[in-house]
Image (cartoon, rainbow, N blue to C red):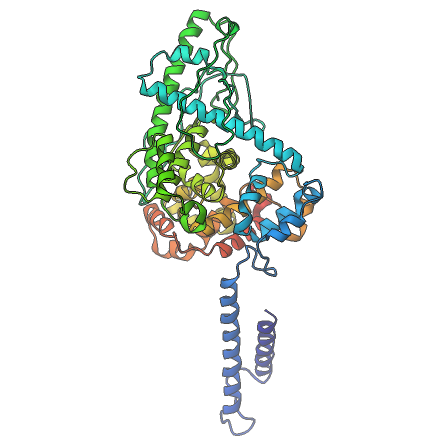
Length: 555
């Protein structure tokens, strides 16, 4: 930049001298002959300016920092990561330095499995090592409860759904559930009706369109199962028989414990205490049957998506790539996976893990259940996290915001598309007016980018880089880290960094869109063709610029 500035100043001074002498052509003082030496000098200076611009542009494109206007920042290394902790295992300064480092350079692949639980809310940023040990033990037990319940429902479905009501009443599991009001997950005791899940729309992509999911009511009156000791299980389910629920004398007389569900506003609903008990019993049986039917539908779609998952992750996870064929097949049998004969052992194993965790999540967040596209979000997490229960809780943290992408009413999707539209409108009114002419100002052409968070537009490593920076922003907001802590970065963290990145990708194509495209279908094809052609660090740089300029207007 300094060199180009010097060249530009010298060129400006030269032409100012020319203008002072009368402007126009440069002639000799008396004979009007062209001064060849001066002409050559002008040409040389102009050439130097052009060369400097090309070099700087080339260097800018090769930078591997998300914020390329500053000095390049490298990814968080293992040594730096260890140095961030106090002797009691707590992150120093509330995790501010940690989040800044991730936000500006990402994470070294060798420590991602250690770092992601902090970014995704499995651990609090101010937790000690002893507290995290307790959290791991608790989270593991909760995950195993969900897996056990998943197997029980599968067994019921395989047996033709007999005695669903009786199974629901005798079952004693209290499963963790999503508390949307507090942005966290825990146990709740309210019950109500849930909404249907979002059918994944993938306009113009090579993947299969979303399969329809029937209207569903959340599982109701599913009771506490007896905890069984599976301390040796760390991955997909062990092939073994299930122990039956204990039938204590009190359980036959007590009302089954209600489990949470969601209203259209995402709030839990309480049972009406005045409802006739007979009608309530019929309702319980109906809900239990519908819950079982919904889970069977989710299972079918999960299995289809699992065996279709690509193998892009393999080179980034050597230990999982080296799984033996015997272990891979055992994992598949444990979750009831079929039609995998055409897959390599590593892909069979990956598919089995997808099934196990997605089934558990469908029970954990029954309002959403499962929709196509969720496997795209989970697959990179599985490649990094080798323990299933840790992968599950990281996915839960990821879905804290992403779950709104899979609602059938599309409220969350419309909100995000509206933000992308506002960013474009405020940044580039010319482009926005062109989109209005095409009736594309709602930005529906970036639908796929929003739903699966750039997963299909970026390669594996680029996806993780984007997500890590995005998660760092979200973690900072969850921890209540104020804007003052981010002054040197010129912009506060935002929960919507992904949307700024999406808007930036569209703005990078503004000239092409304005000059060549005359319909939204053409823009959709252009957006879908971005796959493999985006510079992630340039994209993050442009997204950061948009945050700096517009965050006060948009958020």
